[in-house]
Image (tube, rainbow, N blue to C red; front, side, top):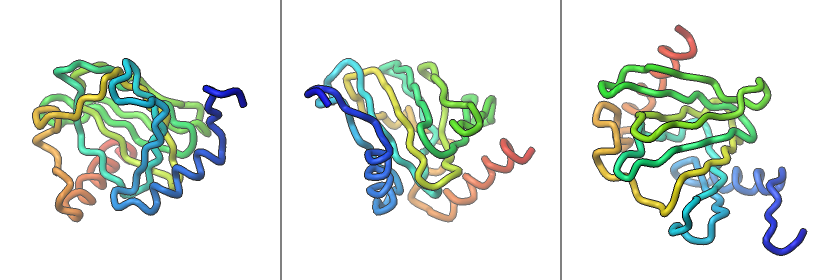
Length: 162
């Protein structure tokens, strides 16, 4: 390949998934941007079942969050300000539902449904860590594993099985 070109292939997905499986958080990024200060941050996010992405939003600074599932399956959930589910979709390239774009300020999360799921994610830069007001106070903070498991089960039951 020409210098400056990165190929996204099975080997890269496998390598990133292997790192995710060994991670305490059951997820791992592979960044394509060379600096978090770039105006566009692009990355692979390998995620495993059991990882917890606390419901959050991108507000102040407002940022669009765009994801494309390259492999595997996730449940994407959008909430109102009180934590009620307002929209959900199962994203799976095998089923012809590839991704979504989430407007700034919308509360959202994903629940990983299949092992070795890899998402291509694009966010406006520069990177800004989420501030406390961008994490949903009505959702578990992630410190209590049993609370997180119950919350994820509840999301699955109210979105997929209802």
